[in-house]
Image (cartoon, rainbow, N blue to C red; front, side, top):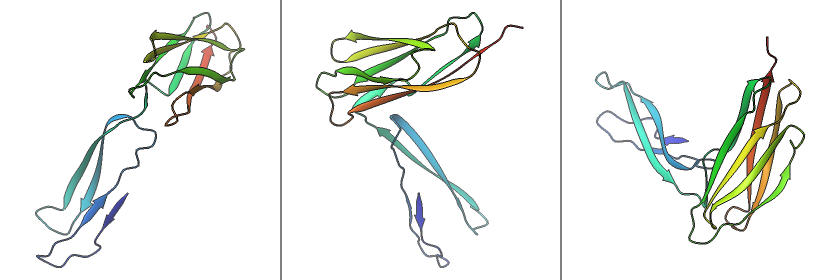
Length: 156
């Protein structure tokens, strides 16, 4: 979001304020804004904002995509890491694709690093969408939702 002085007199100064909503982001982010002016020497100026968004729980991805051809076994792995100085506990809460794919939750490092492995099962050729919800013991992030999409194409 940008806020700025609408008019600046010749030789005067103006103020531009940029704000970035960081919800849904994690790690390093870089956003830019273009400023158009009537100054012939600098008709376009690009401003940049860099930030590092700290999150209580790191996810290698919030999305799982399982796309392939009939007969293939498709597998995707998501890594989850605790970013706070206390042990993380994960408990499966809701999964709505049990007839289409399977998953396993494995604790790699006690209380700090986990892997979730999603694997396709033989089945229909139509696209599917769903999710896996995990409950955590972190009040800062009580629930994690992983969104799942997939499609199996018929062999030709």
